Length: 347
Ligand code: AMP
Ligand code: MG
Image 1 (tube, rainbow, N blue to C red):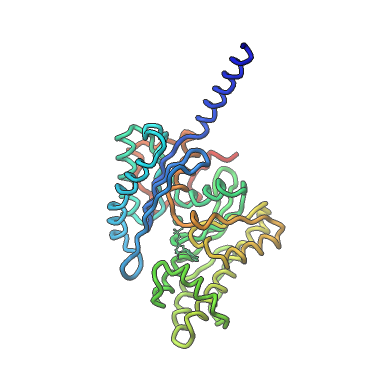
Image 2: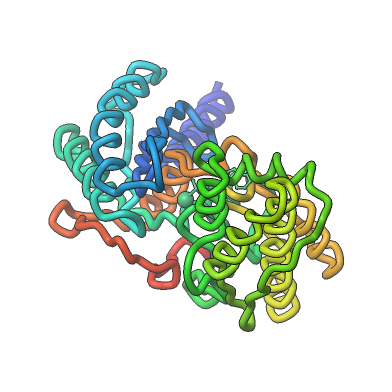
């Protein structure tokens, strides 16, 4: 009898401590094209919904994208709350993408987050979007202390953790790799976003055309390469231009990654962000990792692009380290850099 009581108390204590390290977090992503809403508990994704803005023509217009987010968030939140297997008052924190990103989109998302936080009296957590892409990888793959190649529509960075912060070892000096692919895709009249369509076109290209190769140490630049690739379209086929553009840009990313790996000697390489869905880039970076005796992981395709899950995972770390944001301090940070965040959740 006594033994049974002791056993019950031990189990209860265990459940209480699990509850305190596994908060239930609502994540809201809204830095540019995607409205993402997810609820997670620890590493478990409970609900994940999103809606993506496709510009009718040209690139993403910040105000149009913000109007799209304002329309979609109430629909998504309603859907997510209805699908929760528990009452909404069980949610411990509201995490939102506070920056970096497009000002009008960030302000819309922050307004939604503040409203839910005040209405339900649940603490607010301000997440750095770039770090969320990294934390997603650290949560859903086996890597712990990786060199990160973060490749997306708005950012391209080589990141690693050192002395309390994620440090940027190298980055694009102008536009992001995803932006470069999408801009070139528009020139070819491919649907938006161009990245996955360029990947498909490149598979039937075989002639390597000459493009500029711009890398400075561990940083690089893509906008001149887009201009040069556009010119090649006058005399060459779309598959050959796509093939050449991927080969050149991915070789630059591989060279910078190799340099960063040989400097840092990190035990793993993590590929994250929307462009991480590209199978050819995965193969190239995996080869770089192998040659440096390092393991390789890419985030799963369905979580590579912007989503609410990554914001919720990063928000969990903020919650567990007491980094609660007051509404007064919740102004958005369109230019918030990866290396400005004090990372209190890694030893
Ligand atoms: P994110 O900003 O992280 O949501 O990523 C969006 C970017 O990922 C866009 O620029 C897309 O073109 C790009 N992208 C998505 N899938 C692929 C792919 N398979 N190959 C290359 N780029 C891709
Ligand atoms: Mg992103």
